[in-house]
Length: 222
Image 1 (tube, helix red, strand yellow):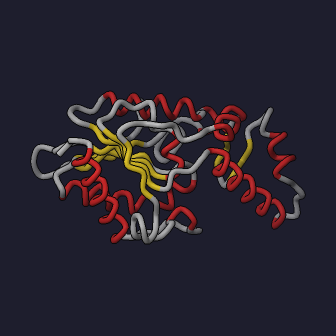
Image 2 (cartoon, helix red, strand yellow; image 1 turned 135 degrees about the vertical axis):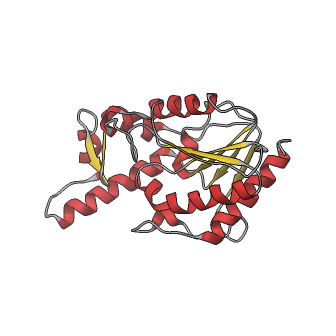
């Protein structure tokens, strides 16, 4: 893929490798610090953990407007194909939309969300920003514009292909799957993706690592 891949290794030979798929767009920035803490916690439990930059994100030299959802799915599958030994996929929020083409021993998903919901959030943020700038826009007018030209949404310049694919994207079934939520009956922590600025939740990171380790055992990878 040619993009940067963050990798954290355990002290000895890894029990398995966990491929971390962060949320998409700005949500990835808000959760990255906590996900890196979770990777370190996984390494302490004997797992290797990898988190790749997607094309157009973070350190990538690819312009985001040249990328679409299908390209992200293919890039993630390419990263996974280069991992030796058992592989588990751990995806968060919109990352769950792009993990189904990976070949893995199991999947773990946290707070999975559909593409249309993510797109509405991005469009509403643009409408609010336009209003503050004295510009009149609407979900309908922006959606119409996005059919023919790139659209700037929450700091992300997205192509018509990306917006169209995102609006139609649904989380795809995979097996074996452990699907978890955030809250009293799931992972203890806060919805970092809703914060205005990047945050950090060490307790949530530990809970994520522990639950992924449980998923690994349930998938027969331990």
